[in-house]
Image (cartoon, rainbow, N blue to C red; front, side, top):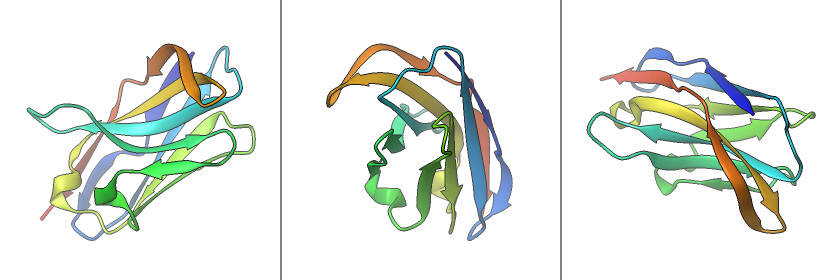
Length: 120
């Protein structure tokens, strides 16, 4: 599975960006696709995920500001980011993993990341 992110960039605080992640290769259902981020000198952290059944989960810090969605084919995941804050600055990575029931199984696939910079 290959993941390619796009949509990062520089934005002022309070602005918006929309990230996209397109998956190709052997995509199996059910699965989960989502977004993680890593700020300089910090560990990678969970941001938002969406399962093929439409269920979503968000990091508390982005609730009400970020919205994750997927296209009908379930091969592209989007992250709409509104009311951006300087602390949202990070490299955003897309993740894909297959699921069996409610458990994630198999290899975890990551994209190369896209940089989001929010200026104050």
